[in-house]
Image (cartoon, rainbow, N blue to C red; front, side, top):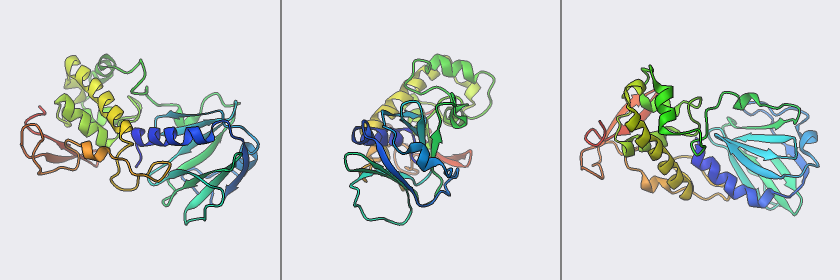
Length: 271
């Protein structure tokens, strides 16, 4: 599933090709996505100019000058910038035909993604209502994590993956950040010290920045807006390296399951 770095990579790839262009036409071939595309979607979007493309968590937001579009990639969604004459492929569900001979196409084999209208009359969107701060925002810090974690018995890895605490720290990036901070993933969030959270907050930012610079992580289905792979997997220290030697101390990497997700850690470097 695309996480924050992958979605930010797509945002950066799409933005320069679509901003300033008007949506000339909309084609919805299959509305049966995770949240069905409403029948009025084409009329809502047609004729509006795309003024900006932003990101909130794993959602892409297209500013139409008051009204907005929300796009979520789900598990296998791709947002592609193409020439208008590009042949269709199976699972090409939505086309936005833009001025300047630009085609923005939403492709999603599993249909767990979403393409939805956000009318200007709705000040807030229900999908964004309970989100925590962005990791790159001023609100996010080690002190913030420390204060929010007091009294919590849940594993620290699950704590930082909770989108109500902070958005965008997916499974891969949580494992990598905890390794960089020297904290075992199963440690109770309420037992992690303020000093440890300071290291963890910095590690989260460092890991996400490097992942964005490398275009995200390609392990299964992720591709950028131009169809290219992400290359952060070449930087992984612990994720998916069970039994292999730690790059720091040579101790074999271990795996455990938390919240039905695989977690990887070094039993020597992380305590």
